[in-house]
Length: 112
Image 1: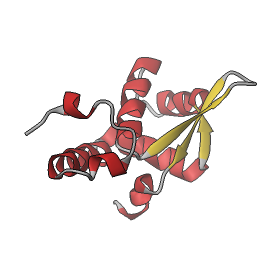
Image 2: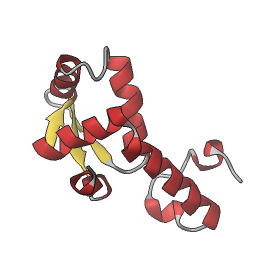
Image 3: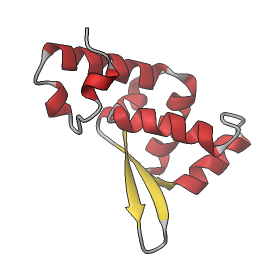
């Protein structure tokens, strides 16, 4: 089975769904994204806020002892973006990054 490097240039779900291997890889990635406790907490917060800045999200997660620093946040955010659970929006005027929940990320509303 192909590994993640075979799919590193894929930018949409449609690209993954063109092959059985791509679909399996995306499904596996998605399950790992939504079942991880840190990423699940991130999804809960982003879903609740609808749109949240990176700075505010980091503050909330540190206060709740979910992550210790920005590197941990970015690792998990990158995973959620790669799994199409959240999207990143750059506000170039204020030089800030915001995150929004995607339709795929809304699965958090149905998980316990």
